[in-house]
Image (cartoon, rainbow, N blue to C red; front, side, top):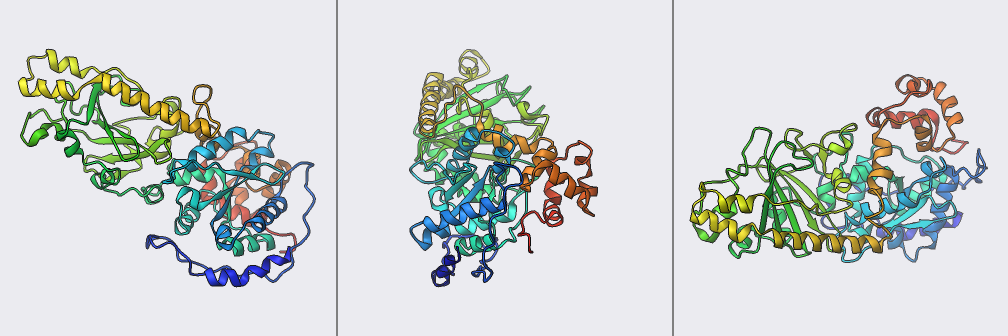
Length: 486
C-alpha cells in the first residue's frame, strides 16, 4: 500500500487544478500531503461479515489505485451505504436512489449509473465529471453535510492525498444535503441551485432553458390549464403551464396563499395579459409562489425549482400555499428535495382542466378573454405533453433499472426518510461503523454525547437535527474514525 506515495509529484503538479467557474463562497483549496506513517493491518471484523472502517477505506484505496490517471483520482468520490448493509438490508433500492439523485444533478447528455466497488457491495464510486459536479462544488458539499466527520486514519490520509478532498467518502444520506431536502440541510438554495447551475432569478433561469416566456406566448407555444382540488394546494385553485425548452419541456404552477386570488375569477398570467403586444384583459392571476420542473439533458425530468412572487428562487414553499401531505409527519413543508417523492410514479402528474369551459361559458369574460381561453387553455395539447414527459422520464429511469410502476421513490424511501425520521441506536451505530452493543457501551462512557444523545441508551430515538448538531463531537468521543494507535 505504501506505493501510493509515488503519486506525490503528480498531485503537486495538479495542486492548483480547479474549475474556472467555482464560486467565491466555496471553501479554499487545501493541499493534502502524502502521509509518512505506514498503513496498519486491517482489524478483523467485530462481527463476521460486518463492514468496518478499515475494510471501507482499504477498498476505496485499492480502487483509487486502479484508476487510469491522476485526473481520474481527483474526480473520484465514494458514497457509503454500509450502515444499512450492516443491518441486514439489501442495497438494491438504495443504489437505485443514488442513481436517481446523482443523475438529476447532472447537466450531462448521458445517464451515468454509480459504480459498486469491492466485495462488500456497500461502497459506490462516482466520477464528479459524470454529473458536472466541480471539485469546488464538492468542497461546498463537504461543508454542508448533515453528518460531519473527517477520517483520522493513515488510510484516510492516503485517500485525502489521492483525491485532494477533505471527505473522499460520505454517507448516501448526504444527497439530502445536495437537494436541501430538510430543514437541517437547508442552505437557502446556495448548494442545490449551484450544483444544477440555476440562476436565482427565474427569468434568467428560463433563459438558461432557452425560454423567453413572453415570446413563447406571443408565438402561441405555451399551454395553460387550471383546476381546483390539487393534491398539495389544498383549498385553492392552481394555474399550470407547459412550454418547450432546449432539453424537452418545463412545467410550472402558479399558486396563491389561502384566501388569495381565485383562478376562476382571474385566470390569466401576465404573459397572457400582454399577448400579442397589447393589453387583453385585467383578470391577472395574482400568484404568490411557483413550482417549476424541467427536462434535463439526459432525458430525465427533474430539474426542480421553487420561486416566490418576486421571481427569486426558494428551497422551501410556505405551508400556507402548499403542503407535503404524504410527509407531513416528518415535515409539512415542500422543499426542493421533496419533489422526487410526489413526482415519482408520474413525474408529470395528470389533472383535469376546469378553466377552458369556464371561460368559454361565463359571460364575465369578453371576446378577447374568450379568445385567450380558446387559444391557450387546450387540455388535449396539455395531456399530450404530460404523456410525452412521462414516457421520456420512464425510459430514462428504465435505463437505470428503475420501474416507476412497481415501486415507491427509492431516493426518498431508502436514502432520505430513514434518517429524517427519528433514529434509533442501531441506525446511529451504523453511521459510526460500530455494532449496536459496542456503540452503546462506548456512548455510555462519553462525557458530552452521553448527555446529548443519552436517550439512545434507554431505547429511545434522536432526531436528525439533534444528531447532526452533535455528530462531530460524537465521532471524536467514540474515536470512531481513527486507527487504534491514534
